[in-house]
Every structure is written in C-alpha cells, then in structure tokens.
Image (cartoon, rainbow, N blue to C red; front, side, top):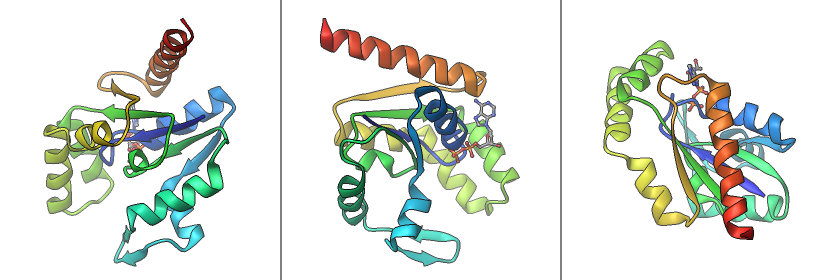
Length: 160
Ligand code: DAT
C-alpha cells in the first residue's frame, strides 16, 4: 500500500511520515530526494521544479505493489492508496518557515495556501481516499496514532 503524506511546507510531513513508516514497517520515501536521485526536474535556486506527470510516471513504475509512506507536498499527485493531508494553524506554519529561514514572501505564500486549503482541494481532486488530520496542539506521536486509527477504520469499512 502506498500512503502519500502531503501538506503545506512546515506542517510536519517529514516528522510524521518517518514515524508512520516506522510504525507500519513501510519504506519511507522523501519525494524530493527521489526526484533528485532519478534526475527528474530542474533546480532553480533552492527550489526543485518538476513535471508532476513525469514524477508520477516514474514513481508508479518503481513503487507499484510496494509498501511505502511518501513524504512530499506533491505526493498527492502520485497514484496512492491513501492520501493523508496534514493541517496546522497557519500561524504555526508561518513561525516554522521563518525559523527555517524562508524569505518573507515565501512564508506569506505558504501561510496563505494553508489558510485557503490549497493542498486539500488538490488532493480531493486527485484521489478518492483522502483523510485530513489537524496536527495543531498534537505531538507527532499523537498525529501518527490518529492516522493509524483512521487507516484501521477505512480497512474495516471496506471489509465490512
Ligand atoms: P514538513 O516536512 O511538512 O516541511 P517538518 O516535518 O520538517 O515539516 O516539520 C517542521 C517543523 O515542525 C520541524 O521543526 C518539526 C516541527 N514539527 C513537526 N510536527 C510537529 C508536531 N506535531 N508538533 C510540534 N512540532 C512539530
């Protein structure tokens, strides 16, 4: 099963994805590292620009039938069995990205994207199995437990 973990930068994707993969015994895949390793996309300054179709095509070829948790703000464009959209209060996103040294304009863009549900809307357009998890005020462990609970319910619903 492929689980895509997506969300606005700073929302906690990497932290949660690593822990989720560990708990499930799945491979952890950082989508940006995967793209760089495969020579997909071009660096523009610090940013990697990729063709989403090319990324999805390659990922499908390499990971079809495998168990993996895929961490990345484009992971909802992949063929995944489940998309987890992590959310956080926009103020938290702003604080984390400032701390990360993002320029003001980039911080603003991402805070706004979180405010208006950009990634959630994209994910719902791309995939039928989307769950949204609010991380605000929760530890990464609590977030992972919530995801595992929702995965369990989904499986039960399909079986029952
Ligand atoms: P992303 O991969 O979405 O960019 P990250 O996992 O790198 O996000 O997390 C950004 C920062 O926030 C990092 O310093 C760890 C912290 N963080 C992540 N999840 C958290 C949580 N649930 N509670 C508190 N801090 C969290």
